[in-house]
Image (cartoon, rainbow, N blue to C red; front, side, top):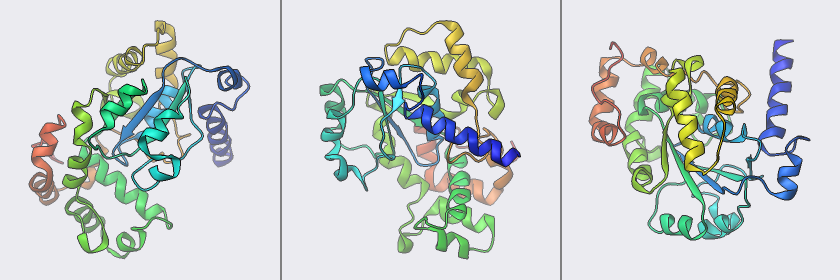
Length: 279
């Protein structure tokens, strides 16, 4: 019964986030809030948490497109073509690495941008769980062949050039330009709230900052309602979504490896490179 209920909840949320429920169909037909929204995140940083925070607003919904990346951007007309297709109230979700020219294109099309970040240690832990669970993932065979979770984490941290696995340092570097692009930088740890090990006040401030960045006037009761519904297993890639759970997967050697691979990047992203599994 619980599994069936979870399935139903996910189907309902799919309709809601794409604006296909009766309450949101007028938004699709006549236009939602005037904001056009472009979301960027590093894969496994909690993309669907940010999407949910946006789509819980009655005037916003996700454009009926897959998550956009460098691998599929050409299918939608390139970056400039994609931005030109965003209607008022629509949200684009992406894993687009930063490139010169993106900021100007966003400005020309009057699209507001958000950049979701997360502690890179949590990203690599989430990465290996996701890849192992997805047999259709291009790196599934590689990670499934590695016998221990610790060794899988080593590969996720240091990368494997032979098999096309980028290190966490390379991934952080590829997205770093979004930090100074004018996008609102949203921390997963601030957005997740107490249900995911975060803080209720930080969550409310973050939701308010998102709405302010998009130019949306939202009463405090709406902010509270969004926060109350934000943490949910209805996400298609939800696993646990906990702030500190990465510590259970790290040890001193993995802490040291991550600092050597991405210590400076952690600092630039605002995370403590000296944080350890035992802290």
